[in-house]
Length: 252
Length: 236
Image (cartoon, rainbow over all chains, first blue to last red; front, top):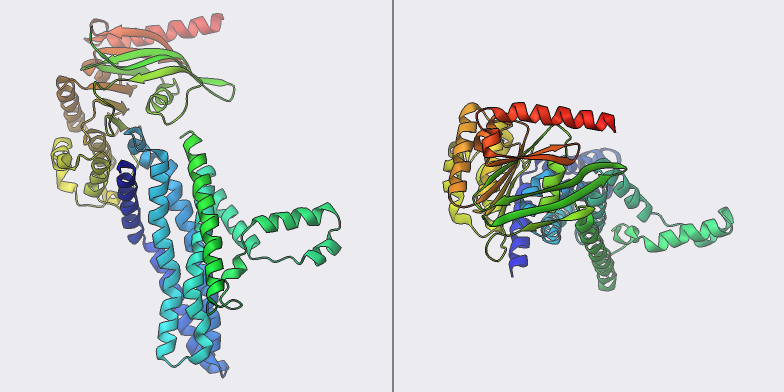
């Protein structure tokens, strides 16, 4: 019970801190203005202005979700090893409780924040008569939070073990790598022998983030959403365990 | 003989090939204030971090006895540089420290004691260095700890703050709580400490009792010890 209480206290503090972080809202406002503005630009140049706006909205939302998830992971979960929490750790708070509390609090904000752009865009385009072309935005509202949670988990683990800059750079690199789909046959032709096997092995370990791309995937298939959820939970859980294990041994 | 609240035995810690702490031993009894003094890089902060469990020692032991079954908040710690989340207010920060130990009833009292009650609802981003130091001290005291560990507590405090700190420490001592202070402010350390452990190049080179450090004698004794240790090192 004591552990859970400590985790809840740390979670509440993390949520409070993140609610007050203005940088994230500035990014969100910028994204929404850009997507709504594209309705006007689309109307000037194309017949299907909603398709243009949806496309821009999806790209912007995916980028915003990933960047904010990585930033939050590096800055807020990574803070567990900073001086801010030394008195709490000295007073007897366990490192696992601190990591779990920060992770849960920041994770909740990541989930909410990454779904907001696509929900707002879908809702506003729907009211303007967007029709069927805006449906990927609805799917993105479900898939993007899962992708964001996954990449947030990865960046959280990295931030415990590396400097902020390196953790950020590695997280971006992993995010890009997880969106790539090398064709095994083409790889064998390009890099014959063991090189292609190593690349394919790494690719098989990394999660497939294209699975969360609402342009090519659709949650209208429940099975697809369940698999996406399953992939997110597995990788997030692994990341939390790895994060706690490494943080427990780290010299502060 | 007083009960030992903290006992440190033969502590050693290496960073790479260099010893940060090499064979340090001392103890702090109940109701005692003990000072760790030394030059910059002598190993004071590393020794404190090992005691607090923030880093692991290569060898040696640390035993903490708070008299009863160990509970959260039994150790209060003020780091050398107070660091806080600037997005929170002073009140929220102190409440967080208190809530983790289940002692939220003392928040207002500790704010009053450390002299920053007037700023409790302001964001920490607006605090001065001295106010942050006072808040750090408040966080260390709010859990009603039995063992208080302070790293350079006088740093950043104005004369009024230093006087307040001395009276807080006196009050804690009178309650039977143990206090360990790492500092290189020799005058103020000598004024409040019962005993001083002199650390040089990671080793404890002397333990000076109250009669040897009072009336400004610590400064003289300290330099004498450091110089003779340096001469010994050169001779080796």
